[in-house]
Image 1 (cartoon, rainbow, N blue to C red):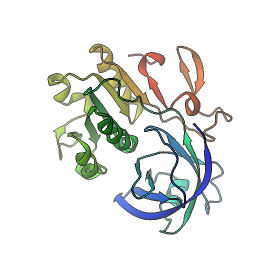
Image 2: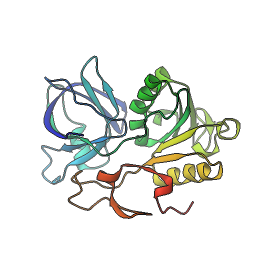
Image 3: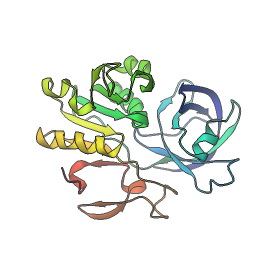
Image 4: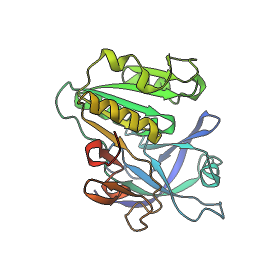
Length: 258
């Protein structure tokens, strides 16, 4: 796919959580084709110590408003700077980057989309696309507590949502791999994004149940073009750059101990 380096304008800002900012960006031209699971590299202005671009998953694409959404966890100086931006400010993006999630494989297939933390971000667009293709996406979202569940109403507007929280304040208490739906439902395949321990646990469940599974890795990606070699991941085919070969991988391509 063609890559672009463009200044996009912030048209809306919201804060779904004290540690997260949702930026909705627009352009004077129609946004290009974007696959669910792809990401952008953001140039951070106004942060003297932030030299490298920041990789951010594409959260949602609103074609009617010509908006690209970025859900950003404000965890360091660079991302905190992004959280201080205002409507009307511009962000320089390199996008769309990487290979995304698999498209629908058969009409009506049931796809479980599992996310934790900011890893839920790319699953919103993916669920929307799958539903539009004629698949049946089902979301399983994990968080520490009810207040940490992100964009829950948006997920519910697309399809069925199941929730786990570590403190039991919403949904079932525990981790996503402990949710009762995994014992009571059959899925045609699973897609996962979130902390690596969570993804490994879901991949182990998928292996045990012989369910096709893909995971979206969150390796550090400084350039997004395969030049800096920051994001190298060991696979059964040797070492590869996640920004070029991923970020989405079939679990059978990885060397995880599952």
